[in-house]
Image 1 (tube, helix red, strand yellow):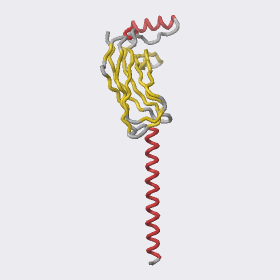
Image 2 (tube, helix red, strand yellow; image 1 turned 135 degrees about the vertical axis):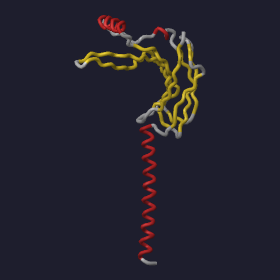
Image 3 (tube, rainbow, N blue to C red; image 1 turned 90 degrees about the vertical axis):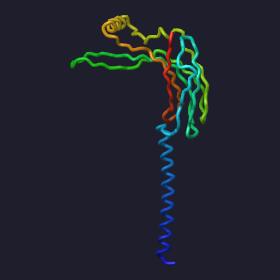
Image 4 (cartoon, rainbow, N blue to C red; image 1 turned 180 degrees about the vertical axis):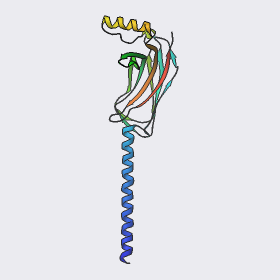
Amino acid sequence: MSDTDELLRFLGKLGREVMESAEEAAVEIKQAAKHVTGLGRGSVKLELDQPKAAPGDSIRGRVVLALTEPVEAKKLFVTLQARQKMVTVQRTDRGRSVGTSHVTVYELERELDGAKQYLNGTFPFELTVPADALLLRPATPSSPLGEVARTIASAVSPSAGPIEWQIVAALEIPWGRNLTGEVDIAVVG
């Protein structure tokens, strides 16, 4: 056997080792990226028995975890929330500027399970719509002058949209992006 053959065999072996190391590094990078971004880890879906409810009624449903691998998480929870779109108008030296934001007017969170390693599964839940759901409004300014200014401003141009209700489910993952799912619901009188 010549020195050339030995050199080729050595280089072939070295090439395979480098390739294997590169493949292992790629798998580790992929896992780290999956952990940080949450992409490719799976999904959280909500299934409701009924997409609408009256004030005081219960909403029943299930959170379905469809995970591609076991996920270490702090908790799994559902939230019933009511949000209202607010429009703000501000005068500046250059004219008016209009902005929008959402204000949470109600929020009820229920933990379905605590810290553990989560696998695929279905978790039932029940949330009660508050009895005063149709009367909810955003928090008012604490000063009487602020309340007067808001009343005058709302008379001139409406600044608040309708209250929108939704249920949000989330798998809270430490040091990573939470997996969430949401469904809009109707609260009717």
